[in-house]
Image (cartoon, rainbow, N blue to C red; front, side, top):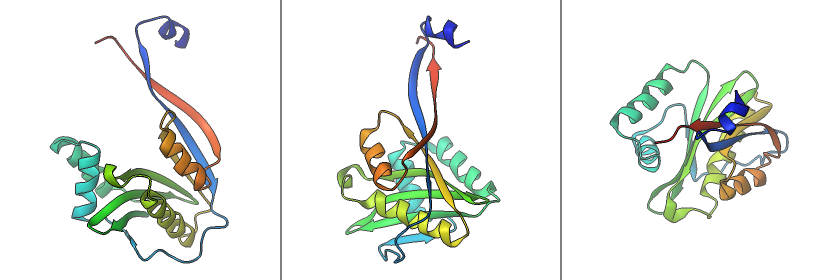
Length: 167
């Protein structure tokens, strides 16, 4: 199928990398400026909705999906002077932490807030018995790739992408 699509008007979008790391060697001391909870608070959800430009329907789908999860999960919120700066969310599948929804307020990017949020999730997962973690990132997102590389996500498991037809 790919050769047919490659020669068509169906464009590749959002090539995505799945990155992996083990959880050995995490900092032992928790960061007091990052809250980790088993459910997302109103401020956490509001930040996610705003940064993902989620309309009411998309916001509700996320809330319903999270409410239906049966695996252990955690929601990290990294605080800044005026409220939340970054958030991240993770779900445990046996000994694997799957990280999602890592976002930082645009005006506060590049200051380590997302790093603090993800590190808090990694520490939480390790305490819950996880041995490794994975996440997905758009391949062309250089700042995010640098963040995750600095957090030890050095193994790329696979890539995938979507194709969209002409408008």
